[in-house]
Image 1 (tube, rainbow, N blue to C red):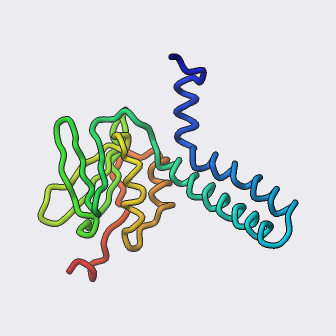
Image 2: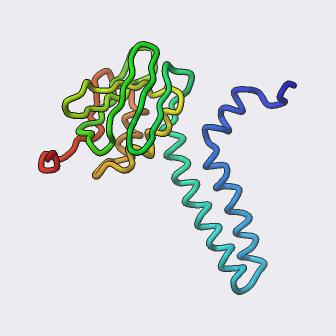
Length: 172
């Protein structure tokens, strides 16, 4: 059975899914708040707030999703980042990470370089399958600046950018 939605339109909707969901919640909450009293009106205002937060975080997540169809698969499980690539792969512990870098590549997707002491740095294409799971993994790093990461992803550059580095006093 053929879909009536073009694949590129479907991909666009999927990329911005959280934003669309938040934008759908806000009018419903507004209608409840405007047409009701008491607890239902409070519930409506709560839905508006949840919708606004969903839109804000959805915009950040959508900016993080740079594409798909890249080499390999990313899995984040039990605070471990696992990358299964066609030629390389490996794991790093989110707790043990000391540096997160973004390396540009010519004509292709950028690559994340995740450094853990005592191991070879793990290189992951930004367009690998399930690479969007790294958004939440990076979010737990102390002092990680999401806006800096999003700006680096969208800025054209020819040199590696250190997105996050563990403080020297936290190394041990």
